[in-house]
Length: 243
Image (cartoon, rainbow, N blue to C red; front, side, top):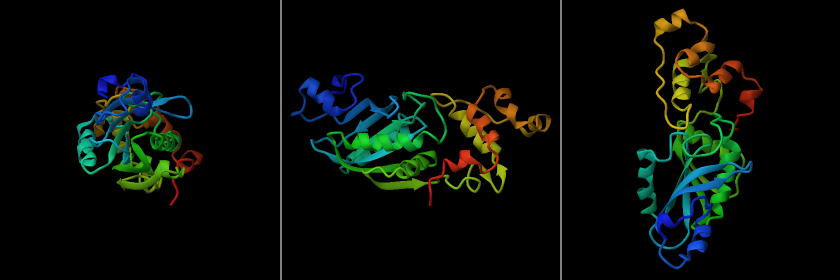
């Protein structure tokens, strides 16, 4: 089965194989643009790389807000498939080609769980799923794991926030405004955005951080949200991943 034979909108390689009659041939080892269904009806754009022979394999999942087509991420594919793993890269909700709106943090619990259990149903997955990534890509692992998906076996995380008001975006009671604002700005659209942080002279004349996003050129709802929750309230408590 060639990539071109994968019917647009097909959710599984098995479904595409059934329609094309390609089950006996060696499958092309790249499947682009699969749609992983979520419980609310949204679907998330998912690319798959497989070892070149027929079979089912343990699967490595990387969920990212930094676009699944990024060279850093696509570079993982060959490394893992050469060692007998399937590799899956997925745009998180609201980013890249995935459905929905980009809502920082909160969607990753259910979306991570649903993706893992969907992967376990695929003909090329042997039911063992590990996750990989750093920073936000690490946090989504812990969010998914907190829902205890049956087929998640391994996490490889680095640099994950997780202790709110100790790590990020608040530390020792203060908002790390420069870092968090720049990150939210760069991820505020479906693709990466230019979002320079204003210089200190601007801040001296505009001390109200609530206008920072609009006066920098783009309204960012997630920026307003963090300013609405400057204490460890129910919003942050709902994002706890335990441990």
